[in-house]
Image (tube, rainbow, N blue to C red; front, side, top):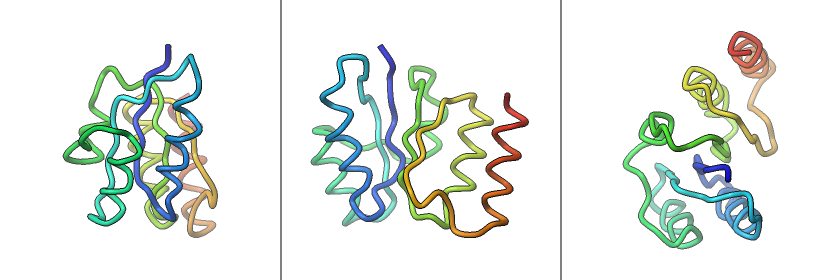
Length: 114
């Protein structure tokens, strides 16, 4: 069983990911966070439980194996770097990032983390 944390709910993608992943027998969604209050409410409703207090709380959770990154594109490079530093597997929705420079940051973080 893979335990998953949902990071963000940009354009309702976090809530959509929850809907897709809940039907999988090999996935248990155990955490989620969104900083925007309107988006946070939708994500919490989709999850059916209260959100974490921060993105870092999810990265630091030893039970989370995989992070689903559905934040604003301009935040994704930082999220990928944090996931790599925390040794988490990553599922990244589209668009992958905001700029080519951010894409390079993400590739570097993944390569360096192995």
